[in-house]
Length: 83
Image (cartoon, rainbow, N blue to C red; front, side, top):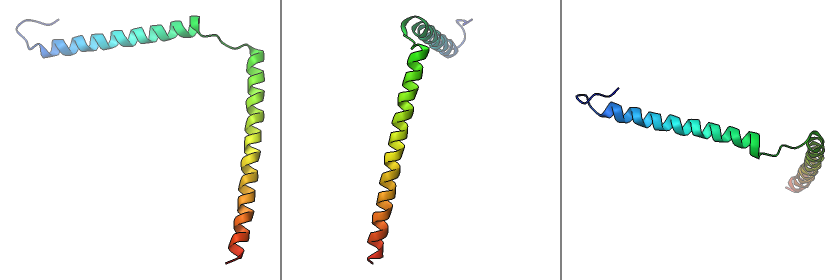
């Protein structure tokens, strides 16, 4: 591929690309192996119970934020009426 009478710069760039692609290939292979063999995936029942917990927590948080917003709005309206 690289000849002795040409500039070595293209050869070095080509080698760098090969090294980069080997690293990318290794990364993808390692990621796949980890996802397939090392990760413990939850069961369907665990997913359902987690989804219910998250939904209830989100609803409670939304209610708290709504109550805070409403109370601050009322307090500020009363405060602005003074001026």
